[in-house]
Image (cartoon, rainbow, N blue to C red; front, side):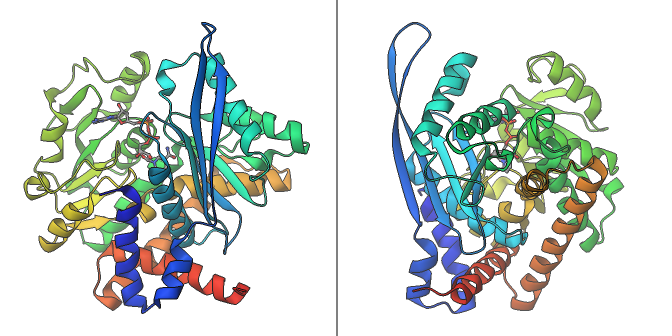
Length: 411
Ligand code: NAD
């Protein structure tokens, strides 16, 4: 199933609960604008390369559109379209005054030199600077992009439109960024996990956790949960899984990965397992924090964890989601669980517009406040309507966007 179809399926399930008309569904599902541009650049070896870049601006009923830029070989218009609409519901679930957008370039960022990456980024901004802006559409990092890429975006955009750091978020802290942005998504996953355990009457100390993916999101989520006294029994990355029943020393594993090109390859303090085995471990909490689609109809029956927090975007395919739901597995959906990143991006934008530097304590305190409130609302709706947490999160998001659309006037 295409990613835009999966989002549409979840949308319609929530729209049924909200009794939305067909016309309203069409309005809310149709992106406002889709842009595809040619990016022609000269590679370091003198070859000409022509790439495709995309920006989908899904909805701005609640504020400027917001969403990451992904540089990955599998990026295409359909994927970007699905992710843009997810951003609309995500910003609405956490109630920050943004709409949703997403962008990307079909390229393998790892195969590029830093100079090639910079040329591609600047050329992309040359092509789309007219349709983005601090009051219209604010990009951010995603797969294959980082704080440095965001600094180039700000610099290139400012050449056309004058100085203004609020055009992009996820910038380096030394260059108009905000402290705590890097940890924000993983920290948010941890906050949501601890809230859920509390609601289930479970103690963190008695909770065994397996995490897939040990990059930005996975490592910060592991650190937060470890600090909260959960026992992290397994972690993994592209190199495979690492299992230790007594608990992984998370800080040691982070240090090891940092010393080995951000890879756990060869990590000596645990037993080596495969990524598939990690997903199927008999643990209390599973946190997929790597890729989309890792839990599917073929392995859903073998997932033993009674609680899954979706740290990655769409790690569970819709067919598996239905199977897990039938078995009573509790799933905290991505649009709530990984919304910490966009929330702190919002704080960065506020900070940039006020020309006032926030401190880390304030960022963490506000993040906790925003996510706690969203969690309570989703949990409440789920029980009130007897629906899954995913349907409840979509109901909350769609309801807010729908009301803003009607109140703002449609014609
Ligand atoms: P990252 O590139 O920093 O880390 C990805 C991790 O996944 C790495 O450890 C990598 O080795 C591992 N990985 C890759 N392929 C794997 C595989 N086949 N099996 C197991 N592990 C594999 O990326 P990230 O920023 O941590 O993002 C992870 C996920 O979270 C993505 O789905 C992303 O879209 C989503 N997300 C990220 C943010 C953010 O702020 N970074 C916000 C929202 C959602």
